Image (tube, rainbow, N blue to C red; front, side, top):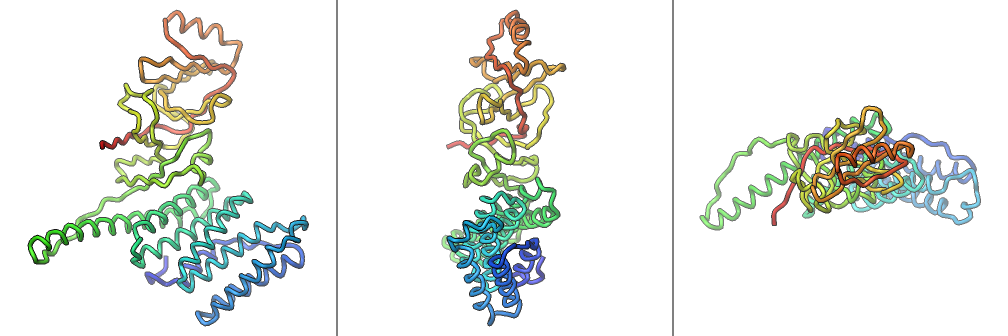
Length: 372
């Protein structure tokens, strides 16, 4: 971590250290690579050289955006443009031009995602988190929005690095914990100051207060849907603008939250509109409530009580609502008749699904309910 609170050059250096060097083939590619290296050199020389660094990046962007490059097969135009945007964002970060830094980092993240470059996309998310983190620390009027954006960017970066087992995951995890703590502190200080302001208005005098011990918080993203893999679940387009902040005891290591639709789990006290906390995992014990996807039937997960028989011949997905049928999933069509006869003898109302296997994508670890 930088020693100084707002040493922009050190923050920018951390971004650059996270970027792996890439060799670009061809004369145009070599020129672009040289321009980005020149930009980095100018950036390192100090503030008076920052305009030259920006100029080099802009020249590189003009080259890479030349429509004629589309016919060059050995040159990845979008990938190179993404790296130039990452470099340019870092130059802006050094010069404390945070608005332009955020814009460049966002563009680089989008381009890396389009090119399916997860490591580089993770670096871009980390860089975006750093820029928002600085803006929040600077005390901007919208600092609480910046805290939330920093949390989101670091969370997405961490989800990428965890899947890749990348060394940067520890760094991003540390930053995420730090932002949670600072965000909570700012939020509590703001609330106390607001209460104090109202009390001063009533009494006409200032009453000092002592800071309280602050709990450690976890930020849990709310997703629009859950599907057959965590990678899809936490994809950018699938995460809503909501973040749930909970202390660690109540968060219970949840990976994400989902808002419930319908009353299929009402007997488990899970009602329509509730938020369920899901910990991403591929296995659960029998009779535990889980988020489950049934391929070839629905690409979204359903929240049900899960049971797998010991031989793997069938699975039960039980809605905890007496008005809804028991879902029986039978992977092998040859077993269908015998298994359905078994449940018929029990006089159980069933809804059979044949020829597929359910996939567990997470375990229910908590329920949140808001009263209006």
